[in-house]
Image (cartoon, rainbow, N blue to C red; front, side, top):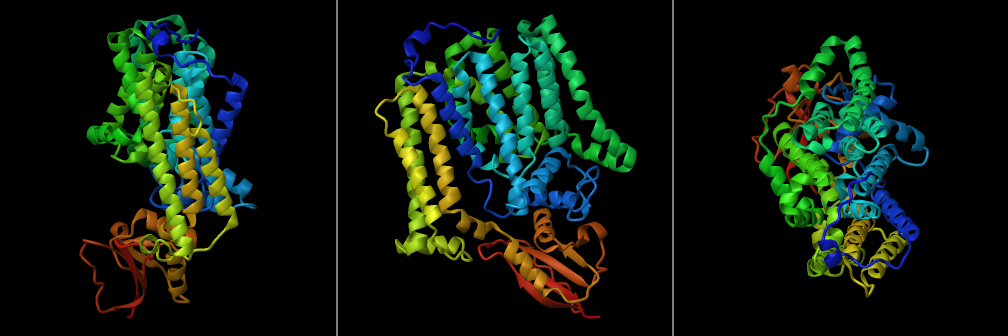
Length: 550
């Protein structure tokens, strides 16, 4: 039995029943999800910081590397768990005849996000009743903070799918305990083999604390769910760690030490501050629902689960991980779940204001993307064209009818959706989801070559490779970032020995990365400068390569 509750405010604020049928709405949602998932997955080089690390590990796997002991640019990736990298290597192997290696690998993010969207929709339906799953999915894909990360080649995407599966399982636990237990254990295992112990600990703590604080979860059905979940999770937590321990107890101990969060980060305020822009439109919608429920929050199982999961996530992420936007991804799940149930309850004036804010926001973004593209293609307006060239000086504008057609189709879709006469609460979340999809699509069509030219390390890496002498023993690096080391390996097959690790200059080549604001290292008179370079758009970092003279 799903969590369905009758409220007096539903009659006052509920959206009128739409004219199109349920089947049509489902097909339109699937079409929008497919468009949202597909845009931006291919067509650009690996971008730092996270994609650089992933593609180097994927390359290691595809060239016969050991999946038990993953390596990054030839060095142990001691903290990495294998699931996302193995799945990315699988899609890279499968689709590489039609795509470049990094694009083929990045397709796996679309598959993991498809699983996430499915679980988000099913959780929304289970928590609030039939029809709300669509609203929850629309709120989720409309989230500002999700759109970029969801299309990147990073293990956080698979971890998010694990979180979403576990969240849906908890919602289902007192109605279908066997199915929920299988899903809960599987979701916990996916999160663990994607990002380590912290996601698994968050899911386990949530599952165990629900019956401690709320009577709804103190029953035999929930106990059965937890028992099945323990059995379902066991293979995920045993097979790879045991195999790694059997291969090398030292490597296993190193991984275990790095994978266990220290809970000493104190980034709680960072995540709270990030959510103020990251979680729109879910945040104001969820806030409305919590205000509307007031004291009933503690007696409503839907809010017990959603708010409890959110608070545990916020607390444990704030203490257990560094402050980065990508780590806030799982916080969107419970917020979208709460927001999905609030759509029909929102006052019409507030829904209209939120709707028009989204229309204006994405309309302005779309206009800016078109203006920038026109300036790059024609040189007019001159100031805009000059600015675009300054930000990506290596980009050579090249007109494409396909890009123009794709941009026009996306723009017409948005105009058709937001130009409809009828405005309603449900139309508001649809407008947000379509708006962010179209804005992202315009960025990934009109501006993608310009962006890739500014962010790619391929030209720098191939220039460095061309400057290498015909015969050399090895390269020592100094201050070289992990992302830069990974991209040199991926693009040019260049591997280095970090001075910070070996503490000696034993190689005949010496590569130094300079950073703005950091003292410049001078290697001494027995080193000769043979190459220096940087990305054309980069004002902060550059590289120098020296050769030993004696």
